[in-house]
Every structure is written in C-alpha cells, then in structure tokens.
Image (cartoon, rainbow, N blue to C red):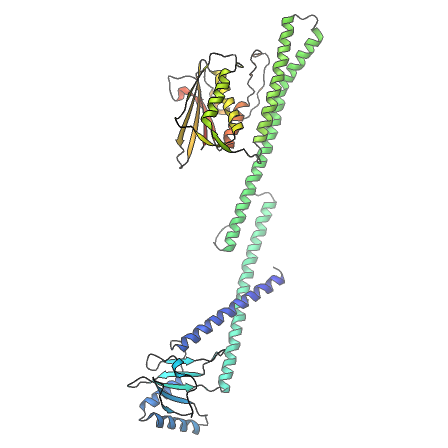
Length: 473
C-alpha cells in the first residue's frame, strides 16, 4: 500500500471521526437543553437546597452571596423566576440574560436544563426547578472563569486526541485487513499463473470486498470454462485430423489402384471391367466430397465462438418437407419404403436455425430409410421436462434389423471408420460414420440431446431402431 493511499485513508478516517464527534456533542447538547442530558452541577443543587430551606428567596440569596464574598469569590448572577417569567429574587441587577419564553424548563423537581449560545460547547446559563407550591425555577448564569476556560480547552484537546486516535485505529485496522487480502490475492493469482484454474477466493463475508471476491471467482470460473472449451476444441481437432488420416487412406489407395489399373490395362480391359473401375473412382470421389463437407461442418459447429441463427420455425412443416424429399428421392435404391408421420394437431413452433434443423432431419431420415425394411415412422411429442420447461421429442423408428449395443454406445460420437470400396459399389450413400455426429452436434447447439436404442427394448414384439431427439421449446 503506497503512502498516498495511506494519507487518503487517514484523512477519510479523521473526517469520519470528526463528523461522529460533532454528532455526539450535538446530541449531548440537545439533551442538556431539554433537561434530559448528562449535565449535573452539585454547586447549583446545593444552592437550590439552601434556597428551599430559607424563609425568603431574596434574603437567602443575599446570605449566599455574602458567604461567597467572604470566601473571595465573585458574585454569581442568580435569578429565581416563576413560570410566567416574574422575577421573585435576584443577585444581579437588570433583566434576565436570555428570553425566558424561549427557554426549555425542567419538568421534574431538581431537574437541570442548560442553555447554549451559538457555536459554544459549554452552557452559559442553567435552569433548575425548585421544590415549591407553584412552578418556580433557579436561573444561574455561568461566568467565564479561567477554570472553565481551561476545562473547555482540555475537553477540546481530548476531543481532537480522541478523533486522531480513532482515525489512526481505523487506518491501522484497514491497513492490516487490506494487507491480508492483498497477500491472499497474490497467492490466488500466483496459483492461476501456474495453471491452477480452480484457484478461488474463500468467501467469508458479504461486504463490498466479499462481493468483489465473488465477482472474481465468477470471472475465474468463466475463464476456466473457456480454457476447458478451447482445450476440448483443440483436442477434438486433433482427433479430427487423426480420423481424417484414417478415413482418407483407404479411398486414396482405392483411387490410386483404380487409376493405375486403367492406365496400365485400359486397352486390354473389357467395357464391363472398365466401367467397374470407373464406378469405383466415381464412388470414392463422392466419398471425398461428402467427408470434406461433413468434417468442415463438425469443426465449425464445435467451435466455442459458433452462434446459431435463431428464428421462429414451424417444425411440423419442416419435418413434413424433409420427409417428402427423402421419400421421393431414390438415392438409396429403396423405392418401396413407406413413411408415416404422427404429430399434434397444433403445429410445433420454436426458435432455432432452420438450415441446421433441416440437415439434422435429413440425416436422420436418410439413416432410417437406409436400414428400414418397409416402413419409417416419425412422431412429434410435446412433453414437460420435469423442471418447469417444455421439450419436443422427435421419434424416428424403422423396422430394420436394429442396432448393436456397441454401435448404440458410439452413436453420435466421432470414431475412425474405414470404407471398403468393394463393399457396395452400387450404393451411392455409403455411410461415412459422421452423420450421427452431425445430428448430435446440431441437437447440442439447440440445447438438446439425442439417444438411440432397439425398439424391442420398449416393445418385445417390435423390431428395428428408435432414434429420439429432444430439443427444448
């Protein structure tokens, strides 16, 4: 902590102490003026008892002043006044030193009230209520003697010494506290610099500093999550490059072999044999194009900065449109697959990216038709998620052979998959192993998830696979 900050803190503490002392003094003065404060004067009480025991107020005052003169003391200005303001006796000539009607009178016998002039800390007059048949008061004017002045000076010095001590104590406490927190902050920042992203401030109080530490912890958590996402993205890209090497090796070998064969033996090959190798080259080229497109899409949608477009979509109409396109296309070579769609009477509408959702449904429907024997069923359900929210369930069922437990676990995850060009050269929709990854990524971007299982798990009499995609509305 630098000197300039220490001086500022000291001045602030001094100012606060000064204001508090002024408030305390003003409060005590106000209470003394109303007769309820801590002011007590034994000499005035003694004089009051002497007056109450005398036969005449004036004679008693004269006797009291004669005694003071014998002791070498000055005349004490004293008045005995009725509630109406009438003076019954006095030791000093002249009118009352203050306006009687403006004074606050004590309510109880022997109660004392004080009167202060402006900008004075000691009273100039005191009023005591005498014990009498009717309200009668003893008014005493306090002389400005040397003892009183010295007492006032001492009290003033004590007041300012108290202010300075309070300011210094506050500064010392603040310095120790801030130094402790500074050392704690250096420790936390040092741990963060060393790579410990879980370093946090312990929150033990709810003041401004505690709120600041809470904000810092929230920022550190956001940084940790961002770094984790960046590391996950980098790891995914490394895995993507690894998978790309695996997926490209087989078709590249196949293409090279096909081109070498045609180059070396094209003149001696029969037309059917030549067409077979040309078909291999065509299929592998299509494989390359689809793979590159899918890999670029997965890399883009997995980036932490990716933001989907959001607009209101009639999802019921979107599913119907994609179902009609897949049903009418003959890419899979299965023209006899029947599609059935079951949806609520009211259209399902929510915010999402129409391009991504179309691609998700296209992939899902093509995959279902690829493995279906005769029918593909699509269903839409709007259900409660158990937390006060609403979800749309997209159910896609086929009547094919089903999915193995190993493939169900890996469904939606990237994994190396080699393509054999000899497997089915007539099928232009050779599975790349990335379609489910794309569907899962799109569902995740919209806050949803995707699961797959065999239909016989729910209904023993059914066969095939059921894909369930859940997206919050």
